[in-house]
Image (cartoon, rainbow, N blue to C red):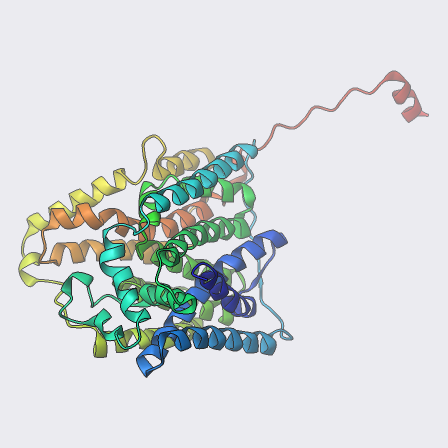
Length: 463
């Protein structure tokens, strides 16, 4: 049940995604893969949020867990029933450059995914309790939520080492699995970590395939799995991989809405996924602000549908910070007056960018090589998701600069995970752009020479 609870969350999210997601003009397997990944992300976030609200309202954890599942599933089924007879927006697929020898990126992606999943299983088995933040912050707060009458300890100002000011979506997701199973065992956070990483990779691969074809999806997936911090963070049971999953899902849903003429339903789905990120970590809240601004510039008034989808969980996040989370000063004016701190942060983040891959298998180097091979069209398009991700990185640098803690220590311990939040979105945008190559630069297969026909066949053709 500790594993099944995550899958039932995906089942609860499935009708929501089918009702709101525009239909791609791509093969059926691509749509099913992308919808399954979005459903697991949506269901995990929605059931966790409803579970926490019901606990806050006074329900016992076990009753709150099952009620959350039933509510999300019933509401999604009702929405799907209302929308199934309406015309569904269709996501128009842009023409993309074709790879020559397309089997090469296909093999690279297949080997990378197999190695990544095998490494996840081995590393989770070797460290069943996860890394430091898992058992000191996320899982211990989940235990408070799973015990009846103790949930307020998860936001107690006396337990400063557990960071009670952090939002509670991921601890609530783990606690929901424990509450449904009736036992607190490592299997629940382990399964959550594995499925979050798998969903992130599947979202990325299908998001590329729906827009650019399977060749670019394979090449992009191979580039994503060159990211060293993903291999290190995913089995650690941190909330950073689920956060990256929600950020990537919101961008993919918004891009699909753009391809369908800024579909209101697709924008609402994107806003909801982004709001789940806001209730996962504070960086998710910053990304919500930046993505909302980028969409307001790109989609104009249609961006109100995105805000409508994000509003319920953003309201929950605001109430959490206002009524429950203990106040904590994140920034110090004295730190901003020290230019040496900024230099230290920039130096450390530049080093983390270099360490993002294991040279020569570095995602940025791979993107650079493809740029010179394909010569994509200018300007970069779509630009708005990349702007939101870059602004998130700039905000991270500003927070590290203004923090009262030691700058070099903070960058060395958190810099790789901060890059992991934005890296999948930036790589996705880069490969969307690379696929729009000029026709003259497309690496096409050589045209096969016509075969010679036998003399008898030639005489028969003449007659």
